[in-house]
Length: 376
Image 1 (tube, rainbow, N blue to C red):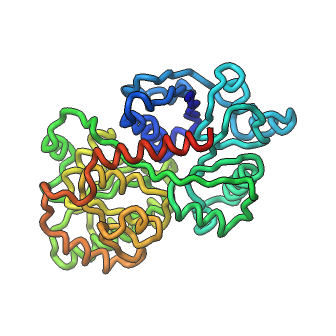
Image 2 (tube, helix red, strand yellow):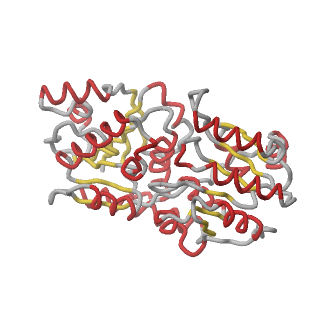
């Protein structure tokens, strides 16, 4: 089987990048006779994201995809999908994944496997500009018209498709709950990394980009309550800060920090190297995932692979992901979050909270392979 992997992502969307990185790396857990051939089509400016991925049947191909607007326009005029036409003609893959651009149907022997992360814009339209909502909605409608197979990361996302759209009879949904691969952590001293960022021995951690739906606000409000109560709890926060220095959301968070004098209890670390982030996560008392909305949380998967407790917002997808192993709080209720944080006083580092790592990895690898085989 020859699979064309389309590394066609906006560089600022680390969620999509990590998702496809993991899809490549998870296939290493297949038995040798089951491993497919992978052709990675990637713009040169993104190549550093796949450096160091060790997969025997991997070929990396420099590729410049059309811009979304011009690609759609020209494809519609010519009535052929210019996002993948040349890849199909030159390389003849069995499957193209994750195919996110369907201006027209791709009528060829290669099978398209679409992927859509979530329908957040339907639940929180206020988090998007009007033009972005229109763009997302049009992209989905083109996909439903011209695709045949759509991969989603959770049952919650699939249910949302049926809730918000009329699904044509030719569409087949496939659910793949990706996992985080963390067995390649560098030979770094976790204590040195902790000291590098000025963190105390015990701390909680949030690792999300600074988008409003990630809901840092509730966590910061919980930290303010803990400080007023005299509870010595520290919070490390990693993630890309808003590109706009005048971001209203960032200003709102900074006001909470200033008003409650949280500078000594909350460390804003920004975007740090992933290997250092994972080492800090592994030593945390717990990971807090406060999001208002997720398709499938990379942060929770990281925590599961590292055997770290998770305090998560009580939303459907987090329940689907963590089950009864999670500690939940209503996403806008900082008082319940305070109680959850105080309840996790001493983490038992040698205790496994989730199923064994190797078992999860192998199961996920064969689940993904099973989807490829089914649509081929």
